[in-house]
Length: 470
Image 1 (cartoon, rainbow, N blue to C red):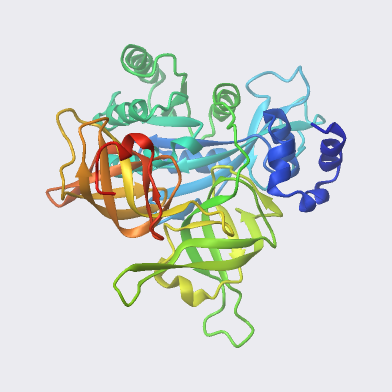
Image 2 (cartoon, rainbow, N blue to C red):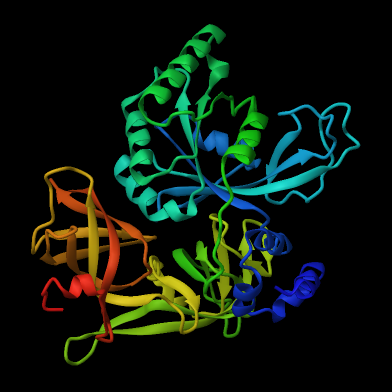
């Protein structure tokens, strides 16, 4: 590794405009060096924490308290809410923990003064950016979201209302769901402790500790907080910094899951006043930068004269990048929302028609499949998928219907034909079955290969040996 080149890049962030993705692959393989580069990109040590809990436990109030936000960014198409925060620590070693930790909104400067009495002249050091995602309390919506988002989530904050006995049925389901998808870094927060007597709060706190140690999540820390009074928020910040690991991003070609598309032009604009489309999504990998050319796939899906599916990719250019109110020159996988301004014609995104599609570098989008071979992990014993069955797939922000073409008992492999082409990487997704007119999660799917829209067959040898008519 050329240390002189890296030092030059880190001393002058403007030089990053000349650094291509291949340079990142060559010079940023070391995790420590990636973190330094991310600092220059205003994304130092970013982690994503998922906030879950039963209805009415104070999820939104907690997120507003720790992120200092009056309102959360909500994505109606995803049933999610997002907010970003910065966690600081006083640079004076004599400042007592956990009061030396403090969380602010993402717009706070990098070196604010400490607010603790006696240390007002000391500066605070920025330790971590954290993206908080408030998840729905409906388990049928939460589970598919957890399955498709696990690679991006580093920790979970599970909230429990101190006014109710622990565990509630919904809370038990959440803990079982976290165990099923393999999320182990959990912090349990007993909320609303300001509304009950101290003795009751302590009894229920002990009940929580006994339950989680005996049943599911072992040594997960348990804290009592009051988001309304901002009580013990500093303890939560300390536990996030010490217990929730940092993501180990691999620097690859950029890939964004589109959640929303917004026309920011004024109504009935004059010629030349159209501003283009702003996409809201989550950057799953790679680096995006202003003035970069992008491709959106599958793009425009249609049928040709022979009735065959035809996909026309959409091309555009990035003119702005935002994370909340912060304007960026570069965006890296941070877990939260990224707003991507483009020069795309707004008529191409009417009625959120591009929601669920994938945005990335030109000619480097994931493969576009019309049929996929899937490894299936059933969540219930003695159940299986049968040929001809209709299922729903939750892939990133995309929900798509598929039909089971072929099924094999060997390794739980099935072949699905999707209703509309889909961009897919090698990762897992949720599979649901229609039960009494409701979609119920039944399995986790792992893509093993498929047939692209162009007719290319991408299947590993063990699937070809099944003897299917691929």
